[in-house]
Length: 184
Image (cartoon, rainbow, N blue to C red; front, top):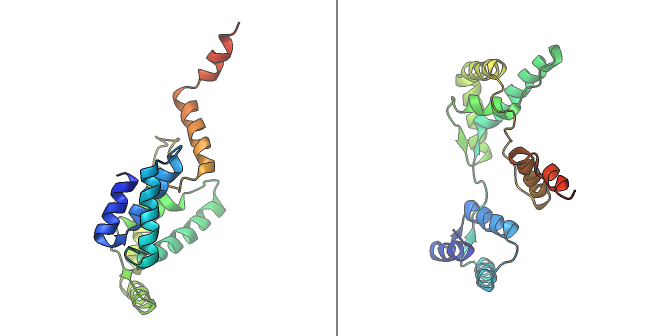
């Protein structure tokens, strides 16, 4: 989608979703220069947001309590392992593996989150521990197939250059050497 389409959809629906906002941000960050039409659309969106014609949806109106439970369990287990070995484990990989095998526990209020935490302590603690242990075992046993894997992160203007440089080094490792050898 381009900026004009995103703005048109937001005006039609009355909402700017986090995904739409992220796409507008991505377009603005990667474009060398925005067109007059894009600036006009952004101006129209800003006006609609200011008047309340379009409402920006908050990034998160809910939490998955299971995430915090699993992450704290993973961190404590990893600390034990790293203290007694030379292995370095990835919290994100291990937590994602375990979370994909556990039920979500969503809440929209603090009271709901407290209820879900209590429920998890009473009914799911053993299941959580088993899945975290299975995730760690799997992580420790896996071969290093893709050492160039990159964690999910926000792209910022300053790390775009680093990413492009890394891509060039990966896909054209001798480019710089060839260009220097051609002068002589």
